[in-house]
Amino acid sequence: MPRKQKLLSFNMRFKNLVLALSALASLLPMGLQAQDSVLNLMDVYHQALANDPVLASALSANKAAQEIIEQGKALYRPTVNFNAGVTSTRSNIEFNNVTSTFPRVPGKTTFEGYNYGIQANQPIYRKQNLVQMEQSYTQVSIADKQYHLSQQDLILRTTQAYFNVLIAQDKIELIKAQKTATLGQLEQAKMTFEVGSATITDVNEAQARFDLIVAQEIAAINELQIAQHEIEAITGVLPTTLATVKSDIQVNQIDQNVKNWQQVAMENNLNIAIQQDTLKFAEQEVERNNAAHLPTLDAVAAYTDNYNNGGLNGYGSELTNAVIGLQLQIPLYQGGAISSRTRQAVLNKQKALDDVAIARRQTDLETQRAFLNLNSSIAQTKALEQALISSQSQLDSTTLGYEVGVRISVDVLNAQQQLFSAKRDLLQARYNYLVNIIRLKSATGLVAESDLQDINQQLIGN
Image (cartoon, rainbow, N blue to C red; front, side, top):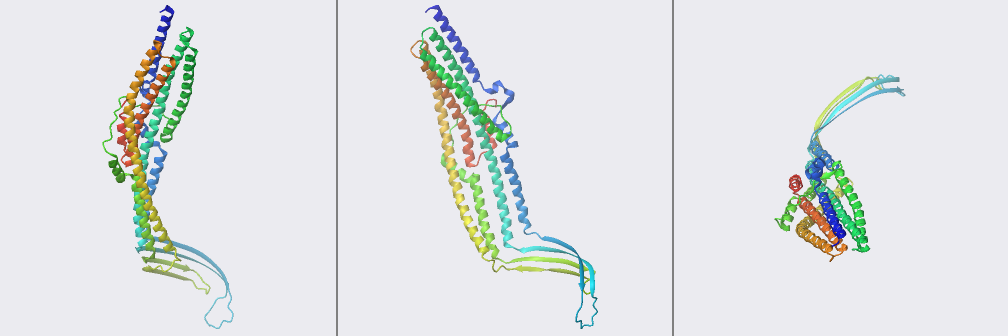
């Protein structure tokens, strides 16, 4: 081999080695490059607990709902009212055709007066109020479940947002590595073309691949920014770098079949529990409206004092009055409103029954979907691990074939593309596996912070 070609071959090998090392460095976990600024999944979750407006709104709604119990109890507590008034009266009276000898004072008079009183009412029997008190406990039960559902939803939203950022981060790193490798192939194609051992087609093909990767890098950076803002919407903080998944992540098979998961979901899913409480409330509403036909009995007491320092006849007066007793009220006819409200309540009860059926079917579907997706991500991860090994072997053999002249540069570029696609798909499958664990637990109503801690152990630095 001529000395010039030997030198060219050595330069190309050395440059490929440098480019490979650069690509390898770019694939190092970001946690090793900027350890101080790396956040893991639990860090992001704790930020979300403190700053997520959706959870904060649910907490405020839950606290407000707790007051319904006190309002319900108040329906059977006494009510006491105080009233008072002051009057000033000016009058002008004349008497005509007076036959009585009772003295009267004609003319203008001015007098003042005041009155005050206190009234108390204690319900003794009001069936409507008793049912409404029971409804207040049902409403608080619904509010508690809705708040717990918001907590579970935050775990799922945080996990999804976190791994969306990881996907975007890794895609950028892979594209950078691919761009470095393609740039090396482009430079090599240009050098071999200059010495006459390659065609311009190899240069054009490598240039086209390089330009395409540059465009893909721009799109990937945009995807990362969008994913980071998704986390910011939950935590109020724009993340910089997130801990990535370990390369030796353990992918475990599901230890129960789908029927078992479906049964667990029927027993624990909060959406079903909320709809069941809503049905209970609708049943109580039917009972409450039916109770409007029943009589009510109250204990009543009142004290009043009316005073005037004058009057039309020239005499003042003061009247005090104290009353205590029982008040019975029997509704006879309310224009058909009570019957109409009862029919409406019965129809709302039927709607609540239908909503329970909808929640059960939706939960069953979500559980099956999450189970199948988790199974699929497990199988995909294992298959793509093998595909990555095969793609690396193919690239090595294709590169060797290109060096000895039995392969062209397009073959090397295709092999590189296949290798980076396999890496990207493997990372995606691993992330899907971890997210689908949370999705399945969420569908069954069993997801908790401990599940996030288990996933956090699969991240670098934990």
